[in-house]
Image 1 (cartoon, one colour):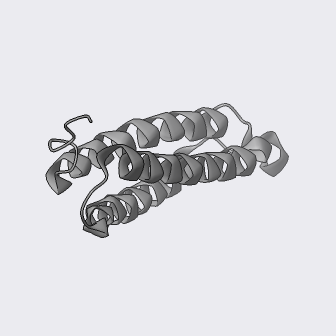
Image 2 (spheres, helix red, strand yellow):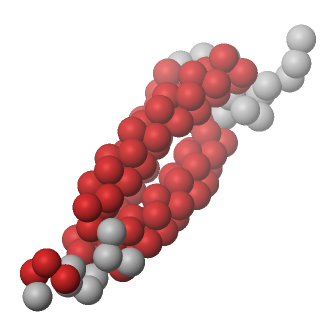
Length: 110
């Protein structure tokens, strides 16, 4: 039997969640910024929705994997995960809105 006492700690999963969202949000922001700043506004909504679905699926994988590997005694470890999830979602929306205002206008609107 493996010793998973370190992984069973809620604080450990909080750090894992923070790192997880930091990496995923950086990647999704770069993809969204690329589509907006390179006159690919038609593709933007597809990329934006794909990153949302991808993060959601990867979030489920992270939670289930952690629950199976660490076998935590309580499911309260999910609370910090959802706090980070909501925080990063708000930050992502604010940045995307700012980016869409700053992006060059498409040739169709000129």
